[in-house]
Length: 319
Image (tube, rainbow, N blue to C red):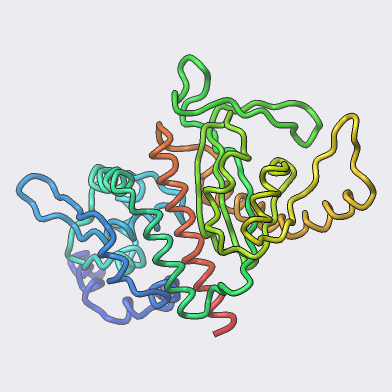
């Protein structure tokens, strides 16, 4: 005789399921950093009227899961309800409800308005430095930018915070996108140290010095950052110049400069791998949100998520 479906609740009382190896996929990230120290930097989560709010760390971890799995807030809420690994990472008990999409969205806004995401990134990097996952001595800085298309495009109906970014595409034709330029400063191992986000029509060179703190020993960047002003700044701060040279119509690059640019491009290519990963797998090619502040907040969360995943892989590989 077929058993009644009433036996189904027993599924949630066995410990065998909770010990399944698949639920340990995020254990490397779990043990990577001191999460309580990180929680002190987060804004407090607020619940619905008359209800206690979810812990700030629960909501922050939920945002990371949404990033890593390219989920909207609505889909993230559903996944939190049905995925044991998601529940484990967010510290949600089996008999506990999950944050609604609106709760997750309000926490993201609170996080953006708090201005703490850069502080959180610095705290994580500081912990990785102490754990010898990130190396500070003789640090190389690689700076580059990518375009994130605005949630709504166009001069009339598009995001008013964005701008038109014109670039030569792979076919040699001029291509314009309405969006933002997202900047990173990474080290030689690919850890992100700083981010910035500007309208797409702002010149890249204006964002360079804000990404650096002067502790860098060497700077790699493409020819968009090549200027006498930047070279003087690097000289004043004892930073070795590894910025690609720019050719002009009346002054073409010498064979030595072309060879130098190729050599620098090999190191610079590490940034492109990061941008490609974020756009292909994390949905960062186009913003989900209107406005520069919210788009930058999502890009900062992506930087945090990248360093956590990379740090966990680094420690697993090298101990």
